Image (cartoon, helix red, strand yellow):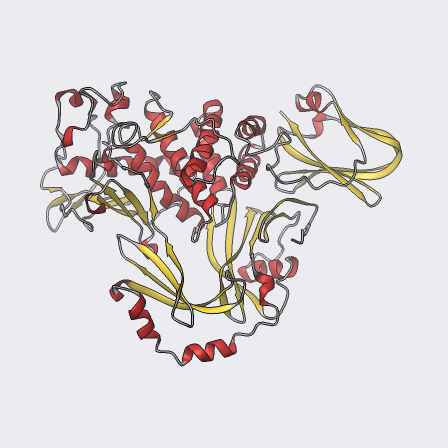
Length: 594
């Protein structure tokens, strides 16, 4: 694989030509066309007349701007080939992620003959033969498919309703090349439902599942009465029907899946239910989603899922499962009723809702396995953080009421498993959640939640856990001037996500043979002494110090030097890159100031 260095440093590369760049530049042309032209000019393989970019998704946070572009070849989109650029509020480039694993296969390829062959086919007949229920077909589009190592034009069919969200790719011969399920489930072997209190009855009462403290088929046993909280619930009143409805600007309760239980309404502002009544689960969904949305808005992230979400409190056809579905931009949540009702546990509600938060932040589409695991970890982290903010009892147990019982083992937020030891999607999620939850233990959820929300906007379809960790560090630089870097590095290192130099694991640092030696990095980090740079001989050269956004903090030319001293007063708290250039040799170090 060809490694391309743009600006001053390529942090690390990903197999299959998925490359993450750090480019030390500021965009002068701030229009979409200007951004597209910059990417075409700068990135390898793109500056040719057959290649073009089209904006597929964009999102702004309080500190950053993110643009995702689809890559086109001869005016046809290339399946799963994207480029994402992230900028700060002044249009300084923070990162560029190029996910174009098979672009080189297009050399000398033309689409004209295949399009002619497709024009001869009865496409409607092809569609009918491949999709069982044509009513839910929402789009059909020709794309160039490269994953079989030979370019071919395929027909992508996308269908959705409130219960499912799927796509298939059909080849010219009618064969289905790929089936894609975009729904994000909380998958379990025996997924059980949970009860929503604040956050669940067992946590509130400091109990574990067993004895009298069991689901007992939704019976409102005496012990559980002590776990109820009476809250003020913001919902809607319909002046025409004179009914109070369980919906607000964030969430709306509907019945769109079996078992068919119509949403609870009332003519009076009284929604006091117990768990043996359908209205109880519905109220808990509305309450916890509303609380979470109000919270993330209060810390500056009020642009996520702004159009709201529809939820079925008694869905999934009675099974032990819950699911988030994009539904063509009209997202839904469905909570199962097998075992413990899923909508009785805040962990389940916030977990599924945060799959929607992730989708809203970055327009996620066709995940790699590790990216899917990362999404599980993000959703687990927010569920853990939210539940922990309400009650710290057994906070390490994910789905405290829903799991860790005879129905399902649940998940944990303090696994000792390390990155690199598993490919299981849910175990990867546990690793990520455990690292982030450990960071939250030290920094508090107010800071750590912001780090997670900000970094989430950088994610792409193939983001790895080490890449995501670098985005968290970048978020800390943007939001808090890097003051939390030592803590963040320590916990990602503990889970083997970052190495001892606070760089991604399993990726060699880009360095030539040593041109110098650093002395007193610890004293410098503490702000006690200067950092010394020692050369084997009297040396001419230069150094530059940049922060994690690529901004130049300090630079100096030197002549006939064997020892340079850099005062810690030059830097604020944070993590920085120190790049030495001696003739044709370059060496880069990561340094910190605490």
